[in-house]
Image (cartoon, rainbow, N blue to C red; front, side, top):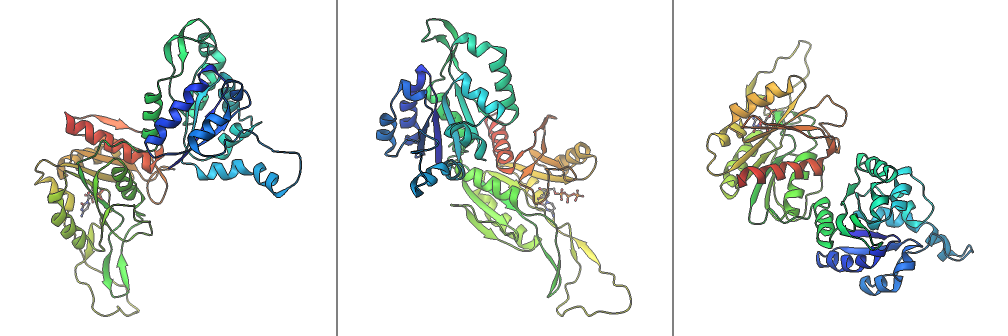
Length: 400
Ligand code: CTP
């Protein structure tokens, strides 16, 4: 994965060199961007030697219209699109102010506005500057916008004062970066079975019943689990999604096929997450030939499909089982009933009528319902972040 490390002008700039090394140990590809004042503290040469890459120090090169210069003028857009994360360490009060107010005068500030990648800042400054209401309000604005802040440590500062403002430890910054990128390895040795997507029930050879599930939530869970070191079996109904790398992918179409696959493979898993939107009914009789059009109305008899989750919940063994509940009303009441009825450890419930939740969106707004009565509402997050929060909760339950 690729990250841009913005280094800004503070005494702690030298610590960014050690940070580069630490991030490289995690196989991250680091591109360093320095502000002008950072170069007063440490030279670009140090970072160029460590990364083997040209350090970006200028927005524009020479004042000419040569192709190379035009290229460098739009480089911030290319870098912005290429990176998986922007880290600024150390981050001065000045850069936080620029970010908070969207003032883009140099490469780093422009990169911040141009990228859609997550942003992590590790501030370092004099204690009075840190505590100043202007700095704190800029930080609050950035946090509200989803920027991750690694708070500075307290201690003896370069200015001779003591207090908060010392750049956080390299390890704390690296840990935050890995966690935001979903690169923790806390699921090593665990085997996760995930169901995803819709199921389809045939009416005749050309028509079927299905639902609006895109599979995005289940695929995000599979992806996040693999990144955290788990072995993943992904039992998937039909979707248009890219199969996440390194998952054991089991394509299915009907509820019966999903049930067979889940029952066959669940013996390998100690965590089962049923994100699939399984059809609740199927035609009682599937027609071998295409149904012909007629003048009279058509009534199709449906029969219930087997409840895969309930079947698993009744025979849990040592497994942690998570179900989903897509609701349009009385969310908590319905979720609690499903928790009991299906024998799950967690029900992840969402109101699919809410903007930013539910089908075919990249975000979700969910509440986790636990057996001990707790309800954990989560804010609107990307489906990948929701996946990680669910995995965090599973690990907490398994550790208790
Ligand atoms: N589920 C399942 N097998 C089914 C139906 C649902 O395993 N035949 C699982 C889903 O994967 C999900 C959970 O059960 O994890 C809840 O699904 P949902 O459709 O919300 O619940 P239902 O029991 O179908 O209840 P209702 O449709 O009445 O809300």
